[in-house]
Image (cartoon, rainbow, N blue to C red):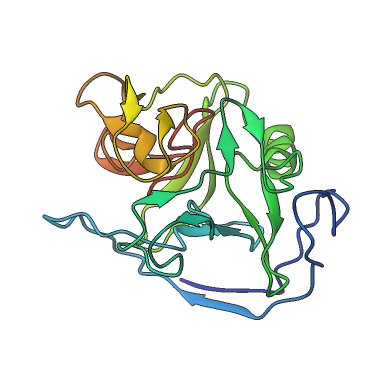
Length: 210
């Protein structure tokens, strides 16, 4: 599958620059090739750019904010800031959980509500799952209209023993831990539906698979 996009969504977005996000949106040159025949691997691979929506907007799970370490590295930043904390939108996110990088790239950190509303209008009322994109490994990215599927991540109890001291409150990615079978979804925020593996974007952490 080859996807080309200028990175400009057809739904309404917030006005940028805005409080918390000083960047200006600009056209991009997204040219992505994704396999039509995805398969599961034995190990999980972290990804800065998780996938792309069917409207050509990137899904980006993490932020550039890092307490200590190298913010540009996926693995060296122990305390990565979250864009959504206790349901509150940070870093200038708009109603689509989207905002703009320094490069001008508009991208999603959570449920792309503008896109979802457009897709709901053309989907069958019987179908709870709606495909909103493709992950980099080729598996589909879906949302549940009824929020039926719950993640298996929980907020840690207590306080941080290092780094940005304080209570585990969801400000940082590592404030959460994966608790197997505590929800419906696996560590990658996905599950098997009959014979097909899919990813879910959810309205609680991790929102987008990490």
